Image (cartoon, rainbow, N blue to C red; front, side):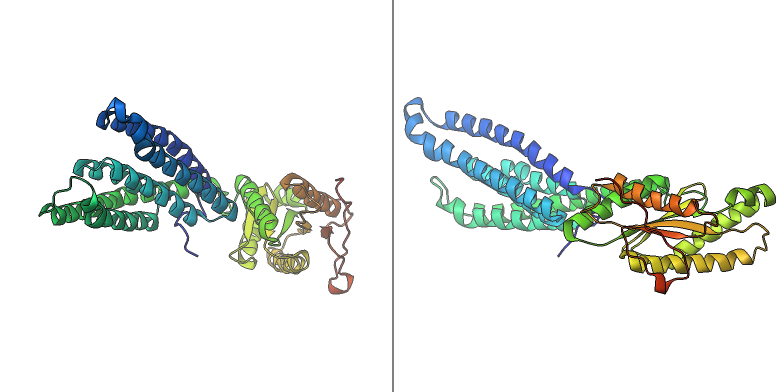
Length: 382
């Protein structure tokens, strides 16, 4: 399925809702325009006979189109398809403008009204909705000029039809090119905002994602799990005896330990996983795997880290403890309960005499697969 350029970065569902809410007020304006046009072109004696075909029916069609657009947009919001949201909204706006042009045909009104759908498509900051809007507007205006307009009462056949065909087509193309320039500017602005936003979510020392980014990614993975059952696990790490390293060897060596552990996390996880410096000497991983696979990865991280620490020749035993938990929507109501359960597992590991443990919660114990002692932390109260 086609996707919008920034749909992984921007919440287009809110933009779509905002767009159709504003279009409701546009329908009111269209009603005022239609009513004014009706009064201006009909005598008082003919109001009763002309109201149904000239006023009620067109407005009824507009209202039906609007209701369909709102229903369809909300449907695709639930489905998580921003591209289809853009198609629905651009189609509705184009058809509404087409109906308005049909009622109030003037060459200058075509130029004004046909600009609205092209401009509205820029809300989605992507060239695909813009080109789609250009295409359907071209088809509607060309069919209107070639087939519907000649059938209208009072139409004078002659050389005007090819001129109108060319003029409306050229205007739409030029308007699209102008909108494309605006789109390029918007894309640069969005790119710059994304870069700045990402910089704010990075830990300046280790280059890992920071505390703020952690909760954003966690909420995102929980939403995916609830939607389609995508499994994921959380590991919270803590470097044991890190304060002793700083006290005995200085912050330079302590910083080196933090950097080495950060590098190992980035090296071991896949591109679909996330590594965070949660704060101080605490780190977190969000892994798109079940608890057993994540546990195997945790053992690998621990093994590489210990080999790295040995090369530093420190007298202080530097180990890592971790709490591990796989998300289960039947056990956790949200991110807070899930994080607290994993954090409890970490504290259970840190609370033992030798530390150096990976403690799992709500997961099986694989005693025959690991030399590590492992506990199952108490379940959170539901």
